[in-house]
Amino acid sequence: MFTRIMAVVLTVILLLTTVLSAIGWVALHNRQTKAVMEELRKEAREIAYLASQGRGVSGGFFGSRNDNSMQKYLQWKAMTVYEEFGAYILVVDRTGRMMDNMNVAYAENPDFASTLNAQDIINAMTKVLSGEEIELHVNVNGDDFFTVGVPFVQNSMVLGSVFIQTPAQVIEGGAGDLLAPVLSIAALACVLSGTVLLLYLRSVLKPLNRLTNAARAMSEGDFAVRVPDTRATPEMAELSGAFNTMADKLSAVESSRREFVANVSHELRSPITSISGYVEGMVDGTIPPENHLQYLAIVSDESRRLSKLIGELLALSRLERDDAALNCTDFDMCDLLERVFLRRTGDLEHRNMDVDCDFDPEPCYVYADAARIEQVVVNLVDNAIKFTPDGGCITLRLRATERTCTVTVADNGIGILPEDREKVFDRFFTADRAHTSGKGTGLGLSICQRIMEMHGQSIRLLDTEEGAAFAFTLRLSENESCKGLPHD
Image (cartoon, rainbow, N blue to C red; front, side, top):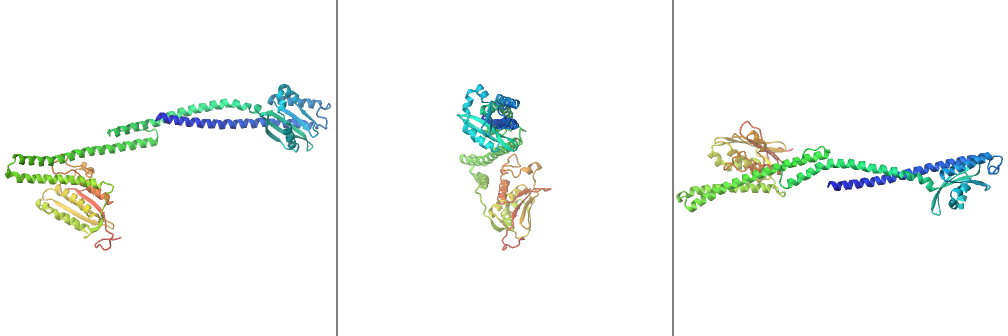
């Protein structure tokens, strides 16, 4: 992956550098061409000035014996321009008389004369004689030439024109010299940027590779793998932290799963072992017939215990399904609580336990799934009965506010250890680690919590000085026909 990314990045760098280098070279080329043309224009203006000082053709400047020094200077100037720029210079006045450096140009380059285009010169002269400075880029026989033309003026009158024409390769030749430095700079930029990006990507992708390896190990069942903290980038640090958090949660889930399998295996094995052992004893005669009823009662109890365990597992599975739905109606919560306790009257009297009911208001109508809420109350009451000693007391309290009611189930039993308080709603958690027969699988409170979550409400363990107390909330009914309700 690192190699592919580097190949893509380097390709992009090379393309960008090539494009930028080409743009830079064109800009430098145009700038240099413009500078050379400006130099030619200055030379043409100087020659035009000398021509105007020589009073033009009519004053005898061209070939004049009276001003032979000026003519020599002008010829020297024409020679200098030719030597520097390889240019052909033509000075012509309105009468058509002219002076040029054709002899010099022809001596240096015999083919140069063939590049002159009379029609182009005539067209250009027409513009210049009107007082306009011109700059032309013409093509003669496949060769490019640049031409500048300026008028020379005396007493506000255009007396003639000065033309300088030079091959394009002379003007653009210097631009070729710029190509090597531009390419060198571009190559250096590629190397430096590639090196910097290589080091940067290596520092970024190294922790990413560690993440990939850790994810691969986790997919193979190693939930103990963790990614070292990295500070390569804030994003990578956040990603590493998120991965480690996910790993912690998956590890916890895996531990819960293994614990669940161990708990359920024990809970299933215990009643099945008892049932099969007693049945085999009665079948093979180990247990005499007069004791069959006694052991059949034990088999019946173990069967009910096994059925309850399987029922709790199925209930939790159904509640966790995405399509699990509630059948909410308006019902009296006080009546539901009383019904639950009436069904537990035998257990309460057998253990000489008291029940304290405190309902305010009564009746109190709520909007919820009555069957699910009854399941929550049954679980809480059964736990209170199970962990409260004989002669103890169970308190049932209901309070209502403007929108919700709170139901509390409390006992004065053995209570919950401080280290277990945060785990009581965890699935498969049991305070009794010895898994004593009949203590359950720790699914009851998890089922209660899931049911309350489905209702959009909460259930919590309260702080108490003795015993244990659980409270859950429900939404009050909005049906005006329900009496005894506070409404908004």
